[in-house]
Each structure stands twice: as structure tokens, then as C-alpha cells.
Length: 340
Image 1 (cartoon, rainbow, N blue to C red):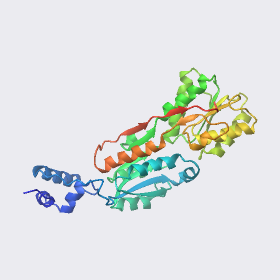
Image 2 (image 1 turned 90 degrees about the vertical axis):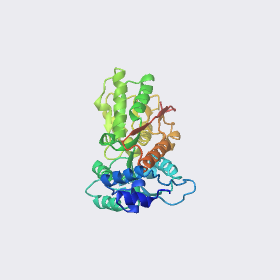
Image 3 (image 1 turned 30 degrees about the horizontal axis):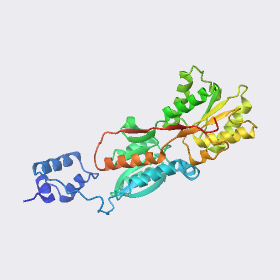
Image 4 (image 1 turned 45 degrees about the vertical axis):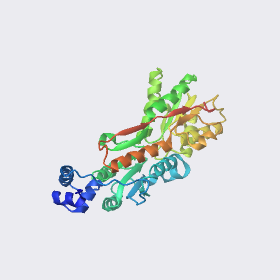
């Protein structure tokens, strides 16, 4: 006679719903109960029924895509995260999960009610935190309840949280080396908050390229924008930099394309020729960078691939595979246009 789920429940002295929750990797099951059910199933040679992914259209749970409300303006005017989210959506298309989006302040004290709501949601299959400006206490608190969690464009791998990031350091190093190969030695850095892992790694790549080429790092040529880092910030900071510096830079590396576009506008305002008087390079290769005057040299990021990888990895975590956290690093490419 074929072994049933009821047989496993009887042997493990639990309910059939508990057995089902164990095999579906649901939360709120103690490790002791999980082991007892799995041992009973093994002894009875019971294999849970597998579903046919193509034919099963039942919604299997909710996937929360969470980002800080500080990124709202970026989502509207900067297509970077929009492309990432598109990749996430496409990756879950065949898995029959319901995706929902939620913005939070990113501060634990302000988001406690939202955190509690997420923890109590029995239909919540997993969470994806997109971007930066989110207190790690929020992320770790949710992960420690057993909810599968992954980060996109942020890094808490040392805290055993899965993440998908770009090879930011290598990309920055390559584009700065390109500027050096063009003969530049006074290269300014224009960046955002270094608390953001990606931006910090881009800054490290800038410094490494200079050091490897025996170029002194000049702090007067380094500008960190707070709290935002958009086109207007890039414009304002470059105007200040060129008005205040006796030894003006001959090239600018901006940590994202929005800052770089602002830098281009500032240089034109100052009646400087690009790239003859000052070259500009960015990072991200957003759509707008192809249409600037002149077109912007930058580092190309494969944004949809980031989202797709994150979606695939989160699905693995939901299914209970590969529980040890991994860091997925997506390679980048330099795209040289007329601004350098």
C-alpha cells in the first residue's frame, strides 16, 4: 500500500497540515518538529507529491519587494531600479507568486508596525530588499523569523544574508584607468553617501586605479554628496569645484550617471569643452547617458540580469535549497563614448 501524508503525520505524532508545512518549507515550524517529520518520512519511504509547474496556476504566496522611500525620486527619474524590478518580475513569471511593492522609511523605529505586519503574513513566501538606505536591523529582524530574504544592490553577506551586487570596484577601476590612459592625472571623484556599499566600492575602485598608477589622491578633488546624489547635485558640486580650486581637474569620475549628467551641464555652463578641457565618465549606463551632449562614457550594468538572478536565488531559498548565504556578483563593462 502506498504511504500517505496521514501515515507520516501519525508516525511523527503531528497533524497532516504540519507535515505539509514542513515539506513546503513554511515558517513557524520548530527545528525539532521539522526533523521529526523528515525522519518519519524517510523511515516510511515517503516522497511528497511534486507539482507540475507548467500546469499549476495556484498562487503559492506573496513576494514582497521592499525599498526605502528615499529612493522614490530615483525610481521616477532614474531607470536603474526600474530595470532591476523588471528582471525580478520576469524571473517570477513561471513560479506563480504574487508580487507586491512596499516603501518603508528605512529606519527601524519608524517601520516597526510594517515589520510586524510582514512577520504575521502567513502568505508571505519571501522578501527582496532593493537598494540602500535600509537599516540592517530591519533586514536581520525579518530574516531571523525564517522569512527567505535577499538584497539587491546592497551587501550584508557578512551577516549571512544573500545578496546580488555589481562588480562595482572593478568597474570603477577600469573606467578611471581609461581616463588615465587618455593622459589625465588630475581626476576628480564625485560620489554619494559612502554608507551605501555600491558607492563605497566605486570610490575604492577610483582610489585603487590612482594608486596603481602612482597618482597621489588629492582630497580637494573628492566630493561626497549628501543626502541625495542626482543631476542637480552633480551640477552644483562641479560649479563649486571649478570655482574654488586653483588646480582644476582635467577629468571627472562620477559614481553614477545622474551625477555625471549634472557635471556635463556644469562644464557647459562654465564654457569648457568636453572632453578637451575636462572629460567626464559615469557609472550605470542609464538610457539617458546615450543622449547627453556629448554622449557619456560610463560603466554598463546589466540591471535586468541583477533582478533575474535575485529572483532565481530567492526562489531557491523559498524551496529550502542552499541555505548558506551566497553573494552573487554581476560583471560590468566599460562603455566609451565621446565625453572622454
